[in-house]
Length: 425
Image 1 (cartoon, rainbow, N blue to C red):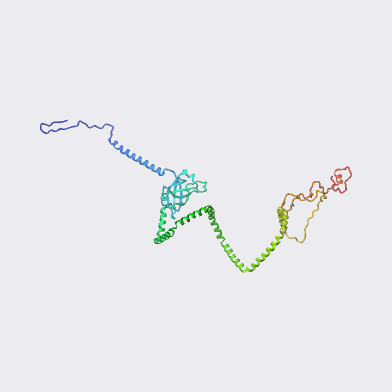
Image 2: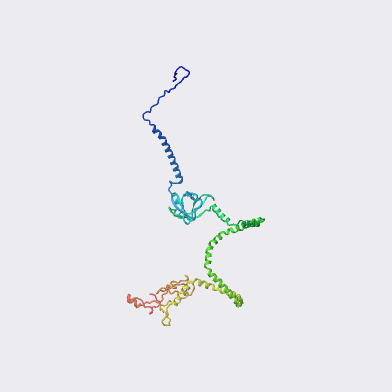
């Protein structure tokens, strides 16, 4: 709205607003709205932090259950840190939880193994501390043994680490220590002498290397035998070391024998001359009787074959006879003879009783050479032309007619011969 204040050269205008202040309605509180947004922002930031913390924990395996295993190694290496990987056949089976150092310099690696992989790892697994490259970080490598144990790796088991990869800086340090002890002037002279020695001889050196390669190629098939000899060398060396006193005594005796031969060389010459003469005589005797000796050997062959076949029986008989050597002496010099009177066999009959060689069965020792007390060997029947046990051999028959009549009553018929010899009935 414009208002004129009066006539005159100055005009003043005044503008007023027709808007009115709006009164707050019932149910609205401007203080609650002012705190809601900051609280929502703080909750969002806290939620994002929790997500990051959970992600980091999952990445580090903080929420994963592990099984503790300890590895004792001469050293852990220069680039071995906690959280290093534990692998077997290229598969990660755990990680290094922490590293301790003993007073003697040994490194103790506490491993956190995955429980799902424990039953696949044998209890006698080998441990190496290796690295991917010469400058790479170390990791624990589990190697399967040649003969895996049937028991799996268990919690709390202690493994021995035998091998640690050498770091390149260790090599540089050793090389630096070596070069520090070398005089540069002498090294220069040595290198100069080597340069002068090989100057102009490249072709010969190349030929030498070629010949060496050909020689090694010819020796390569013998490497297994050489390896076996090297393995057996400690045992052989120990045997020679144990036998060294005896070998020295033998060498000493050899020296004495050599001196004795030198001192008795005249007698030795005479002995050799006599031996030559005896050999000549032997050649004459053997050469002149060669055919006769050959015939004798051929004739002796059946006898020697028979003796060889019956050598067991001969041994039994001789061994049994040797028992008499250990028997007690008789109180008086005498010969004890055990005589047995039995019924005689039937008279000789032709041709069934002709002698012949047809016995079979081989040697029979029975209880020899140690015969039990009060035991006699069984009678062996052989086909030699005479057999007292042959069927039909009646020997002596006691057949009394009076005895029969006494036992069984009167018997008809005339009596037989009075002695009843050889008569059936």
